[in-house]
Image (cartoon, rainbow, N blue to C red; front, top):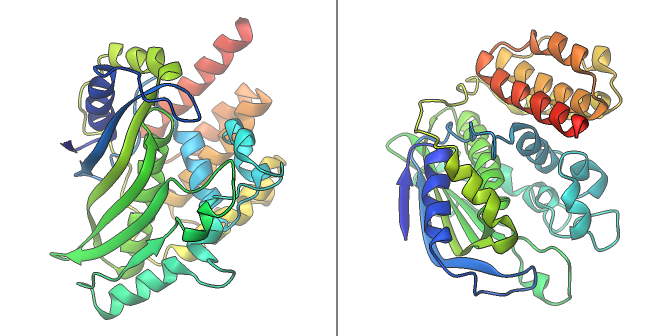
Length: 323
């Protein structure tokens, strides 16, 4: 199956519709699922990487997972703050064996694969060798609760734009696919900006694309919202070296967890990065149920398109509290 769409919601509509037509007769370790084996997805506009629906509008958890990667760590404590379900994927209650951060930036303890890709494409933009390996042969030697679903990330420049191809051995359509597309297209744009070029299309190739039966009703609920394709997209990343800004946000994130907002030292960042920092602050305030403070931080956000994600989460939190 080949799916070509311009937004994440267009993709999810197509994927859920097709998977719900199939029997839930594939039974791996995590329960019965429907499955499409061999699927290629193309997102024509990688900045349209966020769902704007009530069911799948997961800006906060997606952002948390992205900075987990960028922090070069596989610590469980970090990611469970944003996605509590990761607790089930830890072998030792301290780390996630298949965590992408060390594999991206410290593979085998010292290989920065992201930096290698950038250097390869600076020297030879048309190269076919700019590949990051996440799945490793040694991942099959011992049993682990979590090994990478992503096998490789490939980057190349065509017509002056950075194109990306992600290869997946397995992809949970409901829980994993939206987060993967968000994180990898953000990485695509970070690398494009590092090279001083625009982003091109994003391609996502999957061996087993599946929907677990336990998520069937949620997928049906998503489709029942009747979302129409929109022009919603994240703004362009600033045309400047992104790594200093990212490091400042990574440092600020540690303080944000402790509600030490005044110590984050991110006021001099470009508004693009300031907004992402504000979203991380709001995630902490949501966990603390400090809704008045949320409104104060919300006023700091430059791009009002993020307001819908904030309002939606506040509404959901308050609804849960009433019940």
